[in-house]
Amino acid sequence: MTGFLGYLAGFLTNAAIYAMFALGLNIQFGTTGLINFGHVAFLAIGAYTTALLTVAGVAFGWALLAGTVASLLVSFLLAYPVVRLRDDYLAILTIGFAEIVRILANNLRFTGGPQGVWGIKPPMLTWGLSYDLWRWMFLGLCVLLLALVMILVQYITRSPYGRVLMAIREDQDAAVSLGKNITTYKLVSFGLGAAVAGLAGGLLAAFLQTITPNNFVALVTFEAWIIMVLGGAGRNWGIILGALIYYGLFTASSRLVVMGIGGLQPAALGALRLALIGALLIALMIYRPQGILGRKEDLTVGR
Image (cartoon, rainbow, N blue to C red; front, side, top):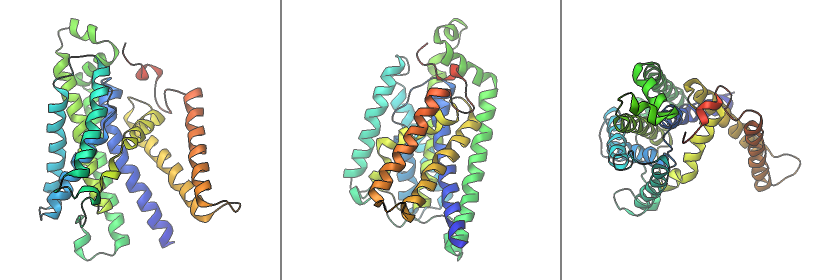
């Protein structure tokens, strides 16, 4: 039973962290229509900032806040030159930026290079708790922060400010004709999404207790896109549902790979697992492209 509870705690912690990560993307794309294909860059900035400060002896809470703010500031520097342009320029820029961040992390000395940052001191582990109990307490911290982010995002999307963001997503020209400064709105939306991703990155660093550049490859961005599309773009509760389904599929199928089925080798089972998950996603896109809780209108880009 202890093994199952440990597995459950790990699954729920990963789901909570990546739900937060995908919520940041949902603010940018689902609510505002900003196409960000380099969202993992802000996860990495938050993770490395939190990890390096924690290893240097800074309290985890302050390190986590610094990682969130660092992602926010970098996002402003990145997005300001291009938010006035068409969305495809932002998509191209973010792809390149994410790869630049990964390459820098892989080559700079203070980030640990390919070996990354080790010895990250997560909160509460120094209290003398058993590792299993710590995992559940850390899960509680992640769920608490996810709930706070969810309250903030729900408040924003239901406010007059959020309605302007959705108007920008639907028709930028109409929003401009109403006197809205869409550049400022886009910049704030992009920065808020990046800050949420940075917060998720700091929690990920604490949970893993070691990070390397391989934790922040381009595929991680598209995992956030999959979570968002599964639950429904523009639907905040759908993001949490999408994260639970996505990580539920992967963790459950990982257990099957470990146990083995029909005498197949682990490599073959791993490939079969990815094929089955891919088939399920294709079926979802065919029969319900808007996601489980979403609307087709929220997936429209470039209108």
